[in-house]
Length: 362
Image 1 (cartoon, helix red, strand yellow):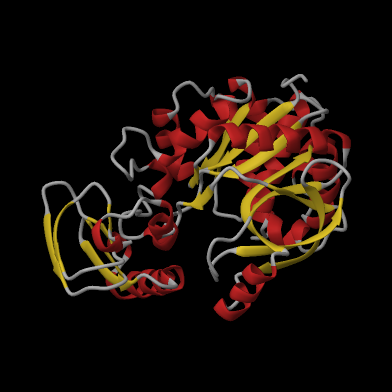
Image 2: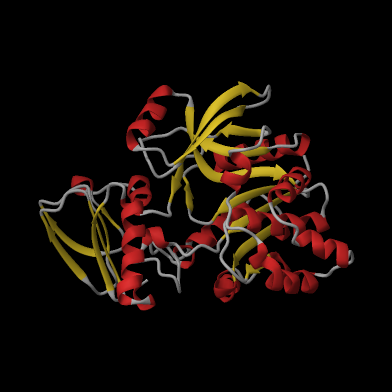
């Protein structure tokens, strides 16, 4: 098996608002050493893929506002492998640009597209699952999502229903995809055994992505190919800066996963956690006394349980009587919020705070 045709695109352009206030728009979660271990989430994700794939095959997609942070934290990644978008868009335009650039280098390329804010508990199993998936998409024109068994009825994730066995490995066709169901439905999905969490990591080959994304998105990068077939990286960067706003704000999940007949899932067993939300972090981290999670913080707890707490260095938190809360402070914001379904609450709070207090608080 050759690894030369296998590539990775790490998505690192989000604002990270689900982990507000510790993740702020100027310095979002992927660039934060959230657990005080000496490596940020972006660096940990890069390390994971660099241990499997050739380093020159790893690309970073981000926003222009974070380009300097990417180069600062990953100085080993060359400038032509960092794609900085001029405006926020969802994952479909981001993947279209990555496909365009990597396809120019290698028409036989197979990609894994991965967020930068996830935890993997078994690196060995992850490597095996990844390579098996890449081998599958090398010979099948499809979208293959890496899926894991639900461990709780989480309403904040996407759920994928198993279809027919694909005849190879732990790979199945996808029957149905449901994004962020109500908690009662999420519990039914989990209990049925037929539904898996969508990790947000998916694999495909350049041929299928080109065909699918060009059908989905307006003609943008195709115009560059038509007007300048021998384009350089500098040409492509300039063209994207001028034309990227023409893309709609649409996700791969909505554009391909929900609509294509050529979608599969791979049952994965690498121990996955979404580190982009407070509830996800709470579920992933080992609990202390009374099931509290204290992240790199100085705290005194009494009659407090099921909480997640993160305080700035040099601050002491004394907490009594809280059950199932987020207590997080960063800069000019202190958040005390019920942990359950916190992602929706925090999105609401961020929007309200920005409207009432201004940009400095988000």
